[in-house]
Image (cartoon, rainbow, N blue to C red; front, side):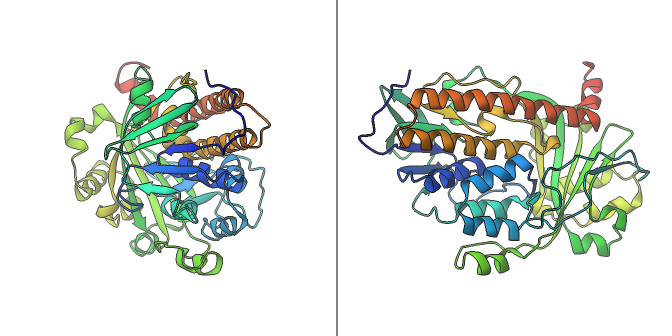
Length: 414
């Protein structure tokens, strides 16, 4: 039980994990006037590992970002987002015969500053803006604990941080969850994938047809394999947008590209996970080329021109069901509590929604309008409800594109 607290000192918030959700929360808390906020990130820098590529931003995700970011960063977010493309998802068979499209009504309509897709790395830089004194890199959490009204985080270098709230925003491999919720297990969906980035100019020059260039496409193979193709075409190049909206902000520049995800059942992969996850980017690129060699030849530019250094193996997993944590003032956010497959494009959006919801709850506590116990309980109740809906929606999309269905059939569990 977290005791009701007085307003004799500012609320102290420890955020474990500097991914999108943790950084969005830090931005929201700073916007709300909370100054004793620290983000502890285990990576040595913002550039130390692949964070992903194109992200779909849902109406809920955009609302959360605008709720947490100052106006200057909202402008930068819009300027670096994807330019408007054809709506919905267009499925194809492996011979590029069109299948019935999936149209998803968007309440934002055709708003000129709508943010419906972003580059993940660019978004992370946007979320880091102004947080130099807040985010600490190279901080590996060893354990955390709660004693009375105080939470403590112990790090590998011997540092001990104390606060009133600890937020577990440390992702799929959450150290906080492993310690406090060891029975919460991810469900392996038995699907493996190859995630890659292909420069748009190279793919078009190599013959990618016009019908695939400017729309989210999904190719469903007759053998159960599938391919998601998502274009990222910037409204403004990131560095040019920074110069206009936040001069001096460190920002990697980027060219337009396609994000591709080739997926197949683990059994059809024909190799052990130890082998698959040890493959180089070039090995993975060639694997995707080989496994799609019988597909329409106009699809080959995606993998023929894919960047090996930007090609990675992935596994599809989900947290089912989503549970609230009964861990007092230690609360979860994002993939630490509701991992879901990328098929619904909802994982990052749900983490951003967590950040907005929790930021409002903690701001109310800081203003003396709520006690900490009830505010955290209400946050978790809301989070479990919408996160459960997001996980289930992601699984439905995966089944509609036969990603999980083929895996279940191959495993004999359908």
